[in-house]
Image 1 (cartoon, rainbow, N blue to C red):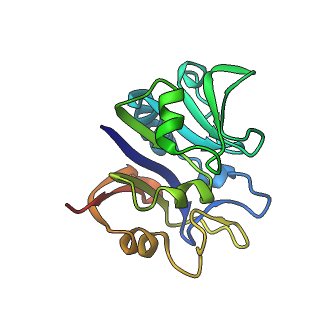
Image 2: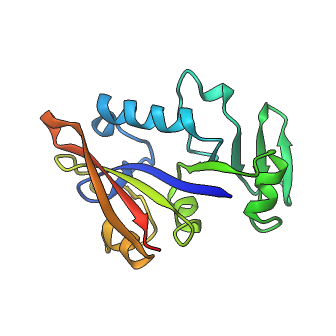
Length: 183
């Protein structure tokens, strides 16, 4: 069975990117990068939209599923032999995983907001990293409906509950909370 985990770091106002839809340096912290990198190194497939990526030394080695409208259902990525292009309008997530030769293990959902939203009712764990001293007015929320609702309220509304908290950068109060599905 495939476990589904989400990963994001957000500002105090729930943004994952600035007004230009770019992750600013202000949201980049060594401890969070180390946590994220370790998570990506242990998953079986990374799932993201065309504007999201993890940009790490091991990134080219990872299987990935890239959401796109450039294909009608599923296709291999002509630029990356380890990537499957997936249009959710034409194929299920399970079909995309089968195309990527992933039948069990862990899928890491790394964004953007619409992709995070697609899996809200399927996450086993959502790793919500928070940078409480950073604000990004006019930025891009991690889920549709943020900042009107907080990321925490969105996760709770979909049956996830905060469990353990880890400090990732004590000097900047950056922490990650594991939001887990209740049985």
